[in-house]
Amino acid sequence: MTELSDSLSIGAYLSKVVLALVVLAISGWLLLYISKRKGWIQKGSDKLYIISSLSLGREIFFVIRCGPEIIAIVSGPSGSRLMGRWAIEEWNDSEREINEL
Image 1 (cartoon, one colour):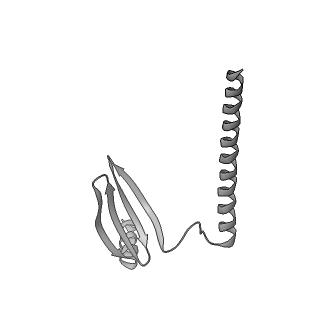
Image 2 (cartoon, rainbow, N blue to C red):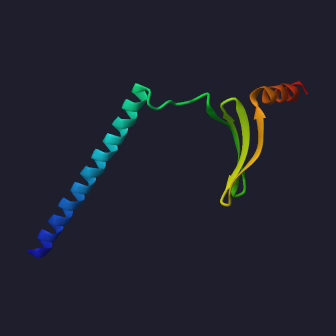
Image 3 (tube, rainbow, N blue to C red):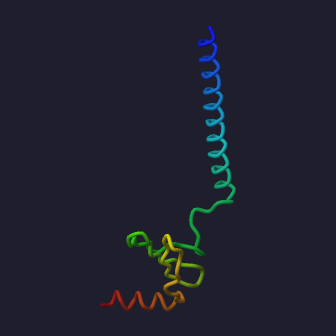
């Protein structure tokens, strides 16, 4: 009889855990849905935008638009390093020169 009562208590415990996870998932989804509708979370922004990324072994090279500047960063296990910084006008001029070639 104890085996039957132990299995029922385990079953009850697991059903409570599953129910709690479902409630958390629905709550998280509703929070994201409401915050997108209210404008608390924006999908994209002109202030910060990843232009390009390239995997270099264990490191990743990012080119990011950050407000009125373009920055290049290498990020990896040893940390992040700034590789370059350009004004948006300077970046656009160099892009036009490359496209003219």
